[in-house]
Image (tube, rainbow, N blue to C red; front, side, top):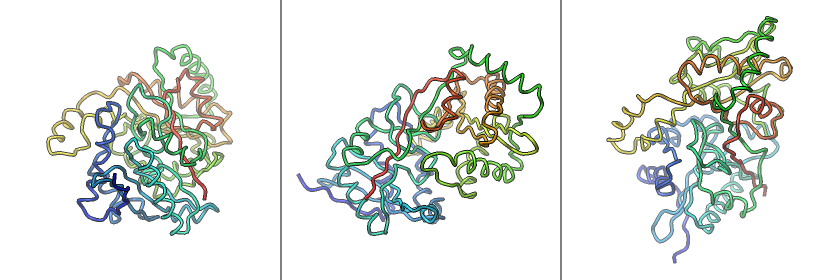
Length: 376
């Protein structure tokens, strides 16, 4: 057997091979949601990709006996690394056949790349986006992931940990709420929310997508204040907020992008978006022309899940009932629109706030992901 060769991705043909390699890994996996290839092409293009506005990245593929057996991306977030003592090499687009020797070769190459660029760790996996499909799936293989969540084979966890990676922070977890199963808990929250509503201090409104720039400013402030207590928190730049959440403008119902206000300021954010993965799973990533016909059909089917992607409340308002009112208002607005279950994802297991709220609402943990770091 020939040794494993690591080859840089440079030509258009190599870029397409790099991005379509996951189809080999997930062949027959009914839980995998293929990424949209046109969007991935833009993402890895230095002229178009959002990452390249604040960092650099290179892409590599592993070959053995002239056959592709793995891929990895090595990247540096220059803006974030300026703010931190520990300089991370962000790894992503990690896909690998079920052979540890291939994973080891990819990790060894990433480590050399990091050292050559003056970096001190390997950190990830993130696919050039801290908020979309990151981490390795540890638990939850009974249903496909929702929008902005990922899916990986079971053996990836073993490969990372055998190489010496450790959890970078608390695991990222997703909760599911089915109204019938959580009926009593939802009723209790509704009674509490009504008492809070009568006091008149806290109000909840829908999003104003016409004035999205102003809303983005509010979200930016909330992200950096409400999440600052988390281990390994990375401050958000405003342009990253706009780039990451612009998907909301295209698919969101503004009535379900909730803001809480109190004492003359915005103190909470609770965005619900349709789980478009229910359609994407049928579109094959728009890999071939006929997939656009499948997309036409899939996008016309009713969406069953509303994905609530964040629960942000200013720390000084954690004990005032803001989150209770946001959750109650979301339930009142979403269920009449035909959604049959709510997803809450992702939050950190070491977050003292959001998991407690989810449990209080009768939610059940259904997926767990882990982000890794290897220090040199």
